[in-house]
Length: 221
Image 1 (cartoon, one colour):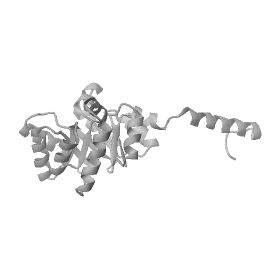
Image 2: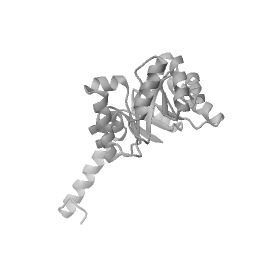
Image 3: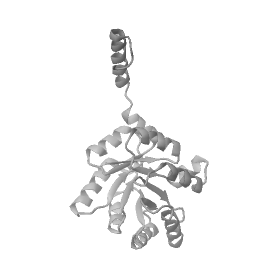
Image 4: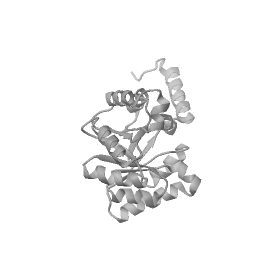
């Protein structure tokens, strides 16, 4: 499974990557505007901390076909490897996904709220599909829809990966990992919350105290 960070904070990506195996970074227009930085600044900083093997995803802003394609080409020109453009699954977006793949661009279909729209994006060649899990819960069973999507892709022998997004809590991430999700994109804070447990620190403190009492030191030798 691919663990992807959903953030415009390059320093946070660097810190998490030192501890966990991070496959890449996703951003979107809202994340970038909230960062207080220009998209150019975000891209430069992120490409400085990402390795060539880590993927980077940035999203189109234009809503018309020509504008989407111009955005897609610009985004995918930022680096020669593992660069993907995120395109929403509107009518125009699906057209742009099809055209972008015809040009050989890496594509993530985003703003997905149902399995059927996601499947159509996969048929148009999208490399990744990003269902908004928690937001989908407002319209029904978000987790169930993603599980249906995984089954639809498997039955049809499609190589498109599902990169689940928009999580309310770590348990939703857990449910999809158990279901065999290929990738998740989560904020750094959620990544930390998945590994932080008070019991772990209590155990470590007990080990350290026992060792210190027995041997008068904090190291093995």
